[in-house]
Amino acid sequence: EAQVTQNPRYLITVTGKKLTVTCSQNMNHEYMSWYRQDPGLGLRQIYYSMNVEVTDKGDVPEGYKVSRKEKRNFPLILESPSPNQTSLYFCASSPQYYDRAYNEQFFGPGTRLTVL
Amino acid sequence: SQQGEEDPQALSIQEGENATMNCSYKTSINNLQWYRQNSGRGLVHLILIRSNEREKHSGRLRVTLDTSKKSSSLLITASRAADTASYFCATDTTRDDMRFGAGTRLTVKP
Image (tube, rainbow over all chains, first blue to last red; front, side, top):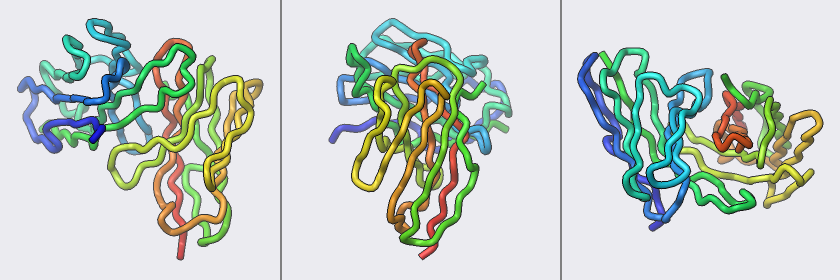
């Protein structure tokens, strides 16, 4: 089944304790992205990657790191989490056609993170 | 900053009525997409309209795009209770990033 998976789905942690949220897709998509969703703000893009070893900052990259060593995986790293990073996080992937006509995004189920 | 701004923020209608949601954006786009989200779950893609298209249909969905006004609308015809969800527009910008709006919360009463 074609899908985007995220782990963990729920996480409660404390300020300053490094954590990683994994994201994996099995559709051979070039484009992968991380978003955070907060009430009243919709989704805001954190980082995105056009392909392996290519990453770019989105709207709200501060406090986050990513890496894209393999096409299928795009982990999100919080080196020193803070309470303002409490949010619902989504990973997404899409193919990247040259004319960008069909690059709809496929979303993972979300990771609810609470930083105390 | 948000790229898309949906209007209205919330919409409540009766089953069978049509629902119209609007989206405005700020920068140049490759395409504009509409997504649906049920209660904190992952977003599901509904429809994509390219920057050189003006209107697109998919089942009960109709999307329009006016690039001169930087706006789009999503029309859901003959709504059903199962259409109750939040709807987001997203712009695939020429900078390669994706910008989402804050969403419209649609409630369809049986």
